[in-house]
Image 1 (cartoon, rainbow, N blue to C red):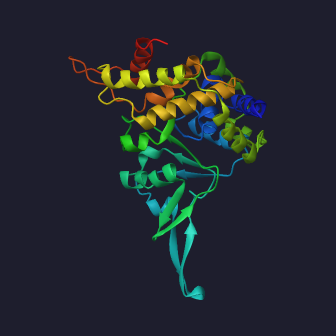
Image 2: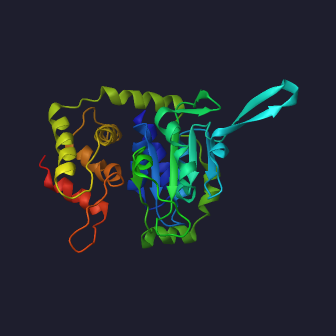
Image 3: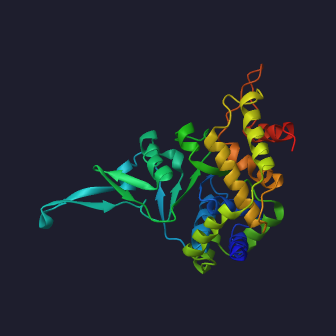
Length: 306
């Protein structure tokens, strides 16, 4: 089963070249049942990665381009009066899918952003007083542009906390960029992707994470990391209990991807930055400057003994 996940990773890496680690982390995020946020400059492959993930896992997906005039009903759906039925009929929006690609999510207004909260947390949508369950599995893969770019609305902390991981692709190295320049167009290559895994197999792999052995010593380590984030003076607020649970769940998924039936500290360390960096806000120094959250999370890791 996990061999098929590795086949997915290999297939995606042929399209998103030079980003093997990010591809592996993205698959780990979905295996853990979490939502994924990809933050970076336009044109580095965020949307292509999201498409490739959905296609390789055999999941139905819809793409929504988030803009400033997008309304919550445009995503969730709307009730329309139909004369033939003498009543209102609900027309489901694009959120009723297994993978929702929320492209450039921070270009939408806070009202539309908050419309995703219930779906991401409860896997359901309430419209016109009626609650409707979303398909299983349900993932949100969102992309966002850097906050300093024109026309962006920063995601609030409550929204960021719903994403299990936040990844950044960055510029490709020289070899990978040359392959992009000389090779076939990446978007056209998406058409050739065949599912390497079925949704039922993904669900079974997610269930098997519960069987992984997690020692009390490892729980102590996760607790120590969470406690250090709250008391170490590096962050304005420390890691929440939900964040600590997310860290442990992502560590389990990474261990499974590595082919182990138990979780070790290195698994937690492998996912620490993508799970925690977007959840932790740096404290400003005496000079009014703040280190990037990623660097501070690495400092946190070094400060807590295994």
